[in-house]
Image: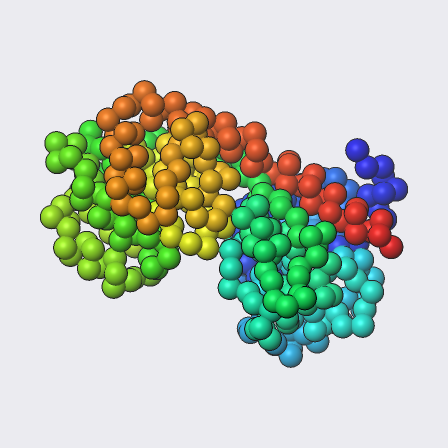
Length: 371
């Protein structure tokens, strides 16, 4: 445990655009540990009032684009007046603006990275964000992202291994507990029918078309239904659904604010990502409710789901393997429930807020110790 003197020896500025629930509770947890800090976020950021109610100083600042002169000047004024030791930023746009605002200042920069890929030593914009040498630490939300940074190569250029660290974003089971199971009859699913669900942005790399074709290959006698939730539209998915002989049992619901609650009514949750997956929140929401998950070996998904312990992990893009995993869980209720219980314990024990707070505090202390 850190002493009171150690806790008060640093001052941190958090820079958000939006603030998700895990980030909000991490900040609250850091306050409980005695950290001295302020928060900058978008004027419309959800949960900013929660932080204010907890006695945290919150400044509202819109970040319009990567190099927002107004925002840069406002950030610089705040840095000059606040005598901060560390600036912890949570989006790429926040990082680009913070790096410009902090130029010439003796502050340490900590950045958050939530997805695999989309950076390059040959890309000037990457040097203006995560590859900038003034970034002291990159907190990766999963080990797959950290490995991506360590595997980046161009001539003599490398990302120093001490710069990247994995810290899983914390959750709490009670956030996702429902008083009653949702009534899926309201979306056209008969009572008792097996339900496969997926919550994801409807884009090609999510592999939704692969899921549709795997669903088509299931035995007809199962009578399963497929529910797709999420923003966006993709022609590849549309074509797969239009060609499906079971399209009358595929329910495309788009974005629903109550998506996490609907997940509680699924028998199996699937995220069929093809590439660049981080630590998918939708999978966590399902696991926290005891729903057996099936994921691919893309990105951080296998770090969440232990194959044949807390769910199934199948090769990305493999329709046959996905169909076999679906059939296995839909036909075996006991196995499905066993995986669901193990999935719930996995989130409780290894992906909790307290662990995130502890490991984040350790990163700050290491930076301060370096002088």
